[in-house]
Length: 267
View: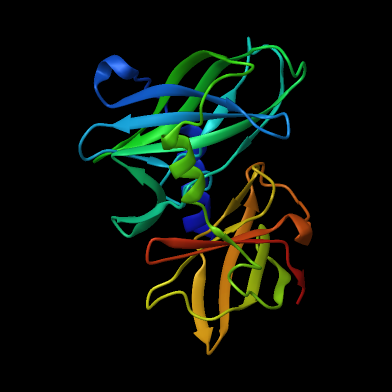
């Protein structure tokens, strides 16, 4: 198990980047300028269109994917950004699971505006992974002026916002516990989630809350309305680390739906 984890970490850390762009015909990025919300933030969208047979990845891509990374250099009148990820798909490739999107996806981005009555500029770069038979990182530039007022709600962004995971309360999730124990080179986390089955086949993603901590694909099983998921966690530096249970995020995927569970109690 440890050798498999180290091999996966090595592949993620030392693979030589292969840069592509919209002209390569693999992926195209369009910024949807969106609208100013009632609470003063601005709701924009990142629309990714992929060539036939290609896919890209969710915020937690799984063992076979590349996590998205965003840079905001050159942005103006923006303070922070929050992503509203639509429900992703689960892919199985050569015995490895990945989580992401095929064909196209709109990812709503809600940004905090410093000066409420002024336009904002969303400028920077996004590095995403795209995959067909091989997976490569792609670096895409973006630059868009976000209007201060008068823009109607974009139906594509609205549809993506509606295609969101259910909250734990909406899914009638009960107690959520995480039992953490040391293992060779890291920590092993066993989560128990009290919730009714979402479907005949459920996939679980566990996130540690720290992007520097690699989390293995969980081993999952059920005992009635109790869903169990066990993952190994290793810091990319190989050093020691701690897990804050309040930052652990558990996503249950089944039948085109998802449930987003934030935090867990001591097991």
